[in-house]
Image 1 (spheres, rainbow, N blue to C red):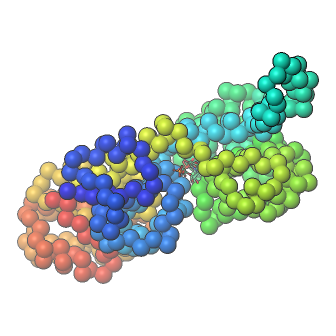
Image 2 (image 1 turned 135 degrees about the vertical axis):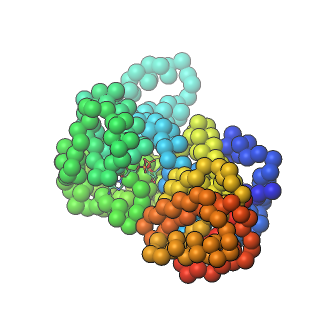
Image 3 (image 1 turned 135 degrees about the horizontal axis):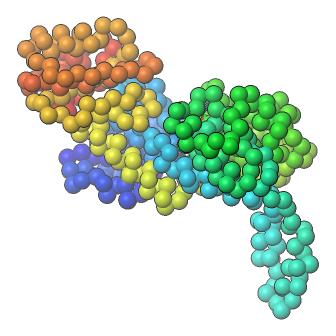
Length: 387
Ligand SMILES: NC(=O)C1=CN([C@@H]2O[C@H](COP(=O)(O)OP(=O)(O)OC[C@H]3O[C@@H](n4cnc5c(N)ncnc54)[C@H](O)[C@@H]3O)[C@@H](O)[C@H]2O)C=CC1
Ligand SMILES: O=C(O)C(=O)COP(=O)(O)O
């Protein structure tokens, strides 16, 4: 029996993929794996029995990836599973920033439902008039799962789209409409675009990447959309630009005291991925990743370990080792197994940054002494006997 714990509510459509041998545990303490959405795990002490964390979503800035990797805890996310939900919010955000739909609805809600309401509305409507997005220039920073979908949708809506992503994946590039201008210099986007939307992960290198200098370059009356993370933008500088009318609207999915009290902001309560479809997609993907890891030791879509797969074990046994990415590890593993008379039938090793993962299939059973010998090798973070 395996136990999983959910730190946030996770869609049942996903959880139902767990077969009977998995049990939902109310307690983190006795769990083998953890599912999470946006709960902050930075101050959380993970019990030793937890072998993996799956983020049912894209952003992993709420998880201490390196600390967990050093404890041999593999962290997964669900790339692309909620991208369409966010894309639709971005399109909605552009429309809400262009026409005073919110103002019009709020005005109408305050009116008495009298016979002359239609006449009154016709008289008032010019106050809520706006512009269309068709024909306008949209700049997209980050052409990953979300950025690509936004770019393609915006093209279909008649926008002239500029995209920037120095690390674009081959897959993303294949999926991108050919009519998008591929920009190598972010300043072009700042200078040319009427709408700018950011879709990059929050990293040390991207924190406050849109600051006072970037805003100063932007066109007067630009609309900035942020459905990625608030800390990507220097919101103090932005608040000044909003007050001065330099930036027409800031559409953000991340509430904080500053944006909640700044004029010309449209703030939504982190709704980007809050659709039935996105929640189901993320949960299904996260559960499948965890099951494959727990039962086979395979890693797919990890953000702190390399992807590494050996299929299903068809031999007598399988052992997996999370370890430091340093020389001489594999020779020590094979020696420990060889000294115990264990024959290796298949082995795969992958590395990513400072961390590596080795999967070994064997034709003779793995004893607790061999497991102990592997654990004692310097640089080994975790050893799991899968079979
Ligand atoms: N509001 C919401 O509910 C949601 C927000 N998000 C946020 O959106 C972010 C992006 O999500 P996805 O598109 O699914 O991730 P992704 O990983 O598919 O795409 C991110 C892209 O950003 C690019 N990138 C990284 N650094 C960059 C830089 N300095 N300049 C330009 N491009 C850069 C990468 O090359 C990659 O193509 C997530 O990290 C998360 O923070 C994601 C899903 C839901
Ligand atoms: O996937 C992401 O990065 C998100 O921001 C979505 O967060 P959520 O799962 O809605 O708490």
